[in-house]
Length: 495
Image 1 (spheres, rainbow, N blue to C red):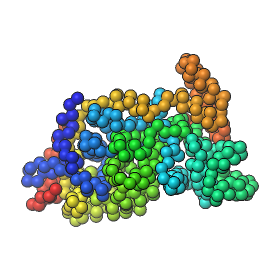
Image 2 (image 1 turned 30 degrees about the vertical axis):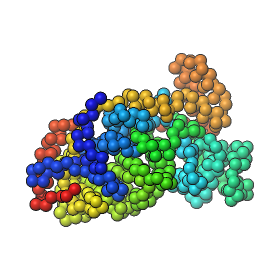
Image 3 (image 1 turned 120 degrees about the vertical axis):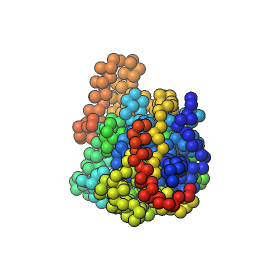
Image 4 (image 1 turned 180 degrees about the vertical axis):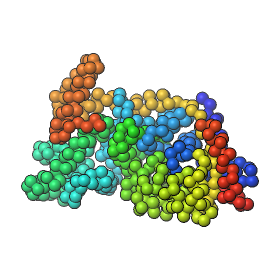
């Protein structure tokens, strides 16, 4: 298969993404690998060309044999990248699409722990996530109980987040789980504190957790993804063997909360494992619409610039992130790129770029046109304008990638539902589903059984189931010519 059209400027040391137009001479340029250590931040309205630029960068990373992690909560970029994976890297590619109804990519966020201290980092990360999601019921006691519950599950093999429900509500299950806990303080919590405060304790902490976790269990996509005890992948392999991981968490199809949960927990586990590596091999994390995953723990990783982690963070509006996250980005990220932005963001970005860039410049940029400050050999350049490279043509191995990832990392959905049912103590559902798998009953029978399974899950949690372009590019280049002269009057940027 020919890939010449999508790798016109391949360079192992530089990732190209745009062209300048100094004195009517078009000059492609990019960012050096060493400068990517300080990350890249991309801001701009939808439809301005962000996806096309990121696609160019990811393609070059794939051809260079680098590790790439793409987390996309809208689905557009991830679907596009399936067309560009080189055949030589087919076996390195992991594709995760939660909407696949036949094969589920299973991810137990409590599985595959590395160093001992990772157990506590996982607890902290998950609690921070739930704190943001459960604001309506959150309190100090709930956090205390939830932290100890997650930590207890981490001491037990083949436990998932869904086991929090029986841990809190089933004395027999809880007694068996406590037997594996080696931390005396944690053991004492269960034997001397838990449930000793009568109904007040139950109402203020146990019931809210049970109900909220029940919502996870009632979501078929989340249940089948996080409820399986063993993940089919290894975090060390994904990072150290330079895998290409493409995550399509399309919030318009699976729901915003589901996309946030899968994206943030998967990203957290990857970053924690990356931070523990002795050999910090480069891994490029592309996070499109990253504000959906911009939890406080991400700020620490952006600020560190260590462990081989390279971020490319993209989204639409500054108001989508907290003031603290904004300060972390502008204070630590080396390369900042703006496509056309709204008037509310223009002032902030104009202040960031300096007096040569006006708010009008930023609100009137044509598509595929950018203003940026580029880190060059560790020093930030003056702001200048450029046009991104033309959109890539669709080629590649999309169907083969999906097939290979299903075989390597997926599990048949019906088998997953049977095992989860058994694990959650619903053997009658498990046996029924298993019999249905073996006898290959009609589709109508399958739907009836799956419905019954979901109703059982909802019942034990006391809630109901909640099933819940080439001509454009050329015109933009022409419109950008005046801007090049205005922002680079008589001075050439040296790369």
